[in-house]
Length: 221
Image (cartoon, rainbow, N blue to C red; front, top):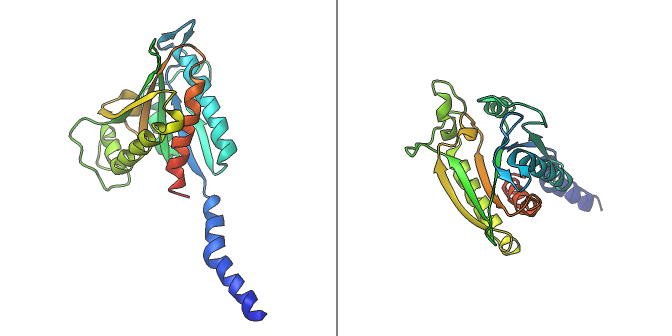
């Protein structure tokens, strides 16, 4: 009997306890909805991009925190906020976020809208190994975790292209471009640009984006 209890204790310490502890590691995602108080973004029906991206970010935040309490979601702005250059990069780098996602919408009349995925690049990338911006300029920050960004972009593409979501949209990319909202960010970062047929169509993107985010963090937990 004692041997049996000892064996159970060993199994708990070696296998169960580490898994339990990992679940209490807090990860952070920053959602950056395009637009702010000064920039309305593109018109979509009788609404503007800035309002719809914020609604989408708030819904994604709620869904993730319900399904994965170990992931904290931060939205870069509230209604009425003005976002200044490099403000979001400063936030992301200061809190050491694990993932940064920029959300963008545009109006389309396509029956099956297109979603494009982007990552920051000047086209001459060489990954860095330093874990910071010491001796490197802010516009090279993306190189520090470039390999992780490459992998995460592929996970997003793969997850959002799966059968349950194929009727929602066609996913293209990831494309590598010097995208302004991602400049200066050390963490793996991705920009999503999705077509909307009307001002309510953003709701259809929440589930595939959430699934992709959870897929990323399932590899860490």
